[in-house]
Image 1 (cartoon, rainbow over the protein chains, first blue to last red):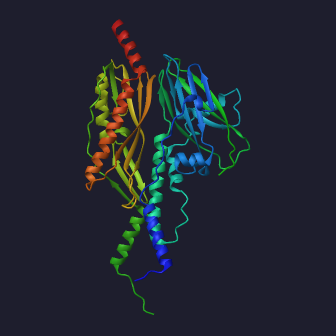
Image 2: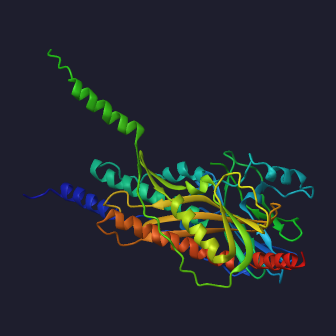
Length: 227
Length: 212
């Protein structure tokens, strides 16, 4: 039996899709840079904090395997270095907020907002479920058989993306003297664009000895046009 | 025109199929309880610690949804058994408290509370998508004094992985849990035993107890 050219082509497409469906997406580990390489950094007392907001689509896709920005998520990498010889600090994602514009000197309202359990600017992992499951379908779903494999591949990729987000996330950690901690915080952006080109990451770090908070306000440039 | 009526059996089959599609299927996988105690022993911290293991921790699970299916791996037993072993390897005196209220008893120096924050899994969806079977657990440890003042807190992210799947599902699950528990409790031991905050607190407590 001889196959026509169009049939051969269809089988090649089918085989290509099958092979493509044989492995899930591979996502890179984030490489922590030397502290001074970060553009946005601040030092208070003996605690140094640097941030790297992932504001470009290319960087986000490379690190997370999908364009989180199009889903209204802004990932920001944070690193805290304790340069003291005896102090200890607690860094927690629950005390990090992303705010439009520059923050006025009176920060009382932010503190009140951070204390509230109901309002958190940082996303919890559960919120990613719909996002990671909604990765755009590749435009090859015209043949029904390969669609099964494409679908499997998409689901495998979505799981790998969620997994990757989870293991990179910043949680509550003690920053002991001479040590550093780091991780990503994921922020839910407003659906509509905001006219400001400057955003501020507000971070409150607990000094374990004195029980007072050190505040860091770290502005960065980012134009958010909405989803 | 001839009308053909569906038999009751056909109706029941159709309903059962529809129910499965609508409700999906929840499966709970059985996993063995693995004990890990192979710690590179450092000097024990001289503290009388209460280890609180609330219901939420003892019943912790890892859930993964694939399409309409939900697959659950129970983790509570493994976490509880190994939290006890870990606490006994780090501190000189350990009392286990399993009731939720968990009142702090007399002569307790500190309370250690583990909490599983979340768990994620990656598994091959079908035989056509090959990837290692991986599980991640994010576990928070909090140490407080009897007055509930924070002494130390840390969050451990650990992974279990099976790269070469064998034909036995039971063996695969055992390997997955073993690698997870080893990574989780080795990292937890390192974090707790090397914490200067806990060692300093223990030194202060010893001095205070000696004076009393």
